[in-house]
Image 1 (tube, rainbow, N blue to C red):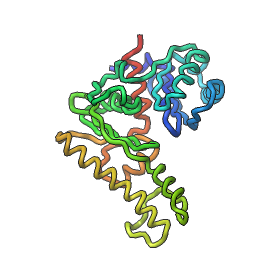
Image 2 (cartoon, rainbow, N blue to C red):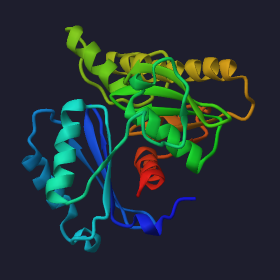
Image 3 (tube, one colour):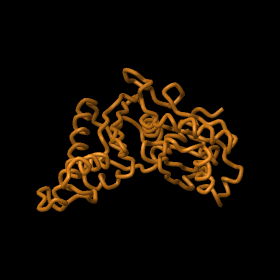
Length: 264
């Protein structure tokens, strides 16, 4: 059981390839969450200035940060945020990797290759929603992570994110332009924009549905739930029936779950 109140003042930092998602837990809820652009060459002082501006005015931030938990898929920025935690917040941060207690067993061929974000999402699902489950994280990459009935992380699938696929298509096709990533009225596009929306958005819905169907068949468990997170999770949830629920703060929740398991 997570002692939510004991975690008051926890700063959770999810470092992704495109954005850094930061959350401040006040013991009962995420008091605030912010996003900053991921810039691998940015110095600790620069991110510290951003962090100060995020925290300005919050009572809990006035010398009351009790700890920091970091999940990172950008190695060059992991040390940057460790330095921020030590030098600016005077806290020894918890950095998530496959060696610490996450509450899930990592049952893949090479556990050291499991991305921190995927471990964190699995930990959040086990603690908050239960298993078996498939977690879909719509980010720079779209990841599908499998958690077995006994709470083991069993791998999954990695696909290019829909924004990445869209940008690559526009960059390589001279006569195609950027579009709004939203569902068209029909699968048969009658102009370039609706044809691209069909191929990219509806095509991606097909990718999601196809992979979920195959993964469920291999898991062979009737109780598998599908949980989506990431920036476009709600939009995809509205356009497919294979997603059971969305959890926008799933990765931040996983960080506080893992921090609670390892504190002290």
